[in-house]
Amino acid sequence: MKLGRISSATPDGPDERIVAVDLAGDRVVDLARAFALVQRRRGAWDAGARRLARAVFPSSMSAAIAAGPLFLDAAHVALAAADDASIPLDAVDWVAPLDPPMIRDGLTFQDHIVNYSRRAANALPNPSIYRMPGYFKGSTGSIYGPGAEVPYPSFSSWIDYELEIGYVIGKPGSDLTPDESFDHIFGVTIFNDFSARDVQLVEIAIGMGPQHGKDFAFGIGPWITTMDEIGSIEGLTGSVRINGEVWSQCRAENMVWSPAELVAYVSVADSLQPGDLIASGTMGNGSSIELGRELSPGDVVELTLEGVGTLRHTMSAEKKAYPWWPEPKPYPFADAGAAG
Image (cartoon, rainbow, N blue to C red; front, side):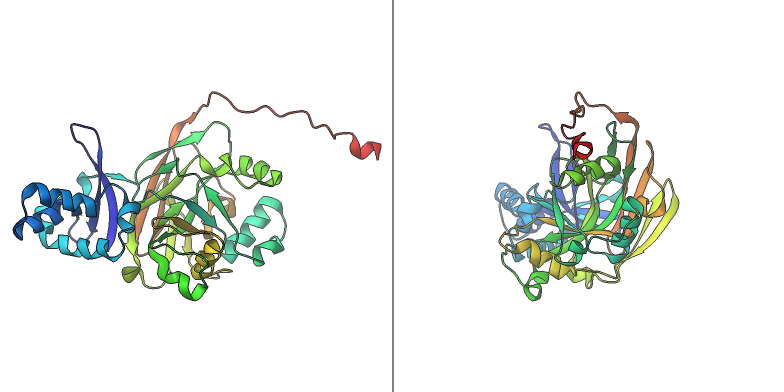
């Protein structure tokens, strides 16, 4: 099943609703509305049916996933009233399909690791990458859903996209082994880890991990495909188009760390939460730095992943200005080398 979220106008403001995506029928099904219709047909009163439907299908996808098997069971029940609760695909306003409590972004594809190391540092990959599955924690306050305009930040002159597979966590867990962890993946989505490369390189040198080099924008969407429909993650193909031009083709292969190993490692001495997003890291050739290219203001970025769909964003035509950005402080040890 493919699950997304749309925004509907109400007198009290936008209402985010969970939908099932029916690509063959060129429509989406409002699951709360459909579920309420099914309950009415079974004899429920109108108010009670609506309250029950919104409890099972709230605005938050993470809250819905936290209901466990009940969520997908209810979604299948709701599809009995799909014809009376459907909206044409081209008539909906999409929002990000997931509101994750936590974003963690890994580094698992060998081809990207090698390509990035050569382009960014003209060096071999850091041996630490092969000691344990690395990941960073990203902000949940800068998520952009399908079709959204992404600000091109004025503090950077080198913006990149990254085609990644987003593993959506379906149930709690901690201290898992790889044999246990794969069962905790509810489904997959496309994760675009937008990167301000020039800022990222400075931040990494500080030794605290990336901050604004990553957290200015994360793209998630267009929807989540559940694991029963995806099957195997390994071998999934993807592509990148910029302004309609194919820049690269990608494939989920040559993984240093498998999805199960990455998810298991995240859970060690920590806890997985329903709705958490753990990203795979960039697929080989899934970023412009690997191609010797970069994004410009106004570019249209389309990332496609087999079994999911196409996530499209437009970079803002004008760079976004910010009220403050730090000026470098004097380096107090500039003469230490000469003195020594």
